[in-house]
Length: 474
Image 1 (cartoon, rainbow, N blue to C red):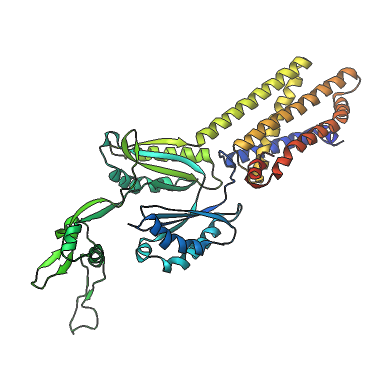
Image 2 (spheres, rainbow, N blue to C red):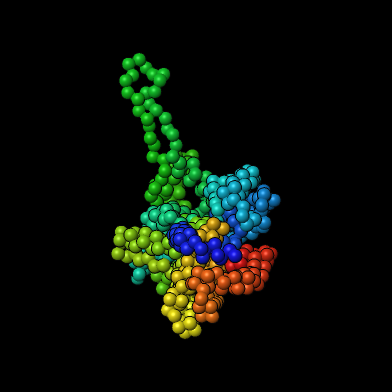
């Protein structure tokens, strides 16, 4: 019998147990930890902004050309888009599970480039963003100002400069972005009646701003060919980019025949404010800025969450007194609770095994055997999970609890039968009694395991996302 090989070679069995345990312990330090298995198809997101356009205009001028170009890409499953009245357009393209997200992103980028020439000029100037979209939410952080001592624009600006980049660089973070980000911009509120009176249109104002708010290459003084004896050469810089409301107010809209000039401040009010005021972020009625953090593929949710909290605590030491940060949602907390419950279940199972074996056999030595063997089998399981590319998640940990019962049952059956044979055949040595006992129960134990496999393994063949979800359980 197969069991006799290990009975006759106890040192070999011990070495194998040590190897299995070491492999499991090493896998525990490397295996990804998440709330659920990764079953969501890879996604690529296209973001476009058309300031001032309605949802209908965005759909007709932006959505249609882009979606026609993106449709039918390799491994593409489906796509969904949103056109909003604030001029924003978002397209999410989903690809087959298992496809390379980087290749998918390149394919979408190439397709969008073919449609760029059909988009409005202002959209092309604003730019088109194409990036991988992570769907595994890790946490949401809210940075706020108690008592509204700072407004949303100031908080958003501080968060963008000082918080977003350090959080994005934390190992395991796939993406960190701001919800309703506000950027400082020069807001021009023009007087419609005054423009009509002067025969101007908003387009004239936009053209004037574009023409006079530009960083131009002015040239060089004294560059060859030059006069004999020329010894100095100067690169000329001009005041191109305007930075204050007063400088914007001096933009010339029109020169009149009498020599006077019509300036922007004559027909508009210029203030420094937010580029977009369409979204409001508040917590406990205090203005703030929300940060969404998504997990990188294969990252450990628990370790990443701890690293993010540590980085946030470090950043908070440099916060002004008027700012505070709070983690309002963290998926790793559920994972930690699940792991804790599994650990409690395993501890209870080991305790029950020792107690049951001792009560029925009355021998602490016999009760000690399964309490040593069962942890070896379960710890070694993590090495196989890592080899198959699985993560430690709710589903696999649930399967671990179920498997604990199977291993415990087998351990009790083996110990009990060995004790029975030793009691009925006292003339046999311990080794011979163990061989005889294993000869009697090896086939039944294998049969029981196969029966249990016939119950759980077919779950792996369920089609669709449900099958992917329970594949790791099986």
